[in-house]
Image (cartoon, rainbow, N blue to C red; front, side, top):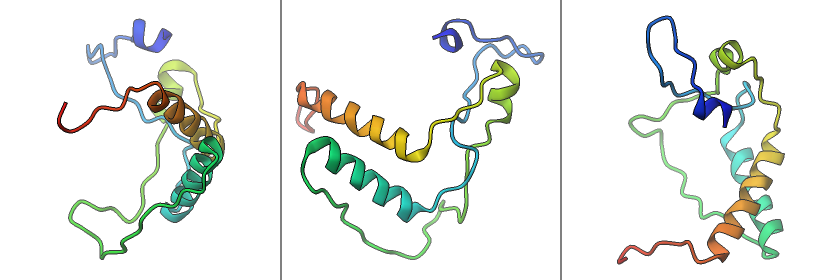
Length: 109
């Protein structure tokens, strides 16, 4: 909350800023999907698999991307250290709990 409640004022005078928060290294998309499947399966106790439809690169797709945490580290002296496996497992547990509590919104609501 320190980051949200007390944002630093940059030299440019900007008070609010969006930061990349990640592992600062690229991950393969298929590894991400497989890890998410495993995490959701473990959290729900059911075997879950994503439906995959492989298409050519689409407009706006990028061949590689990663989170650069340089500005986050500089501004807050914070370097993220959560692995993709741990982060997706925590997400899956949150997701299960959130939707188990009836927070899911339907398109017609």
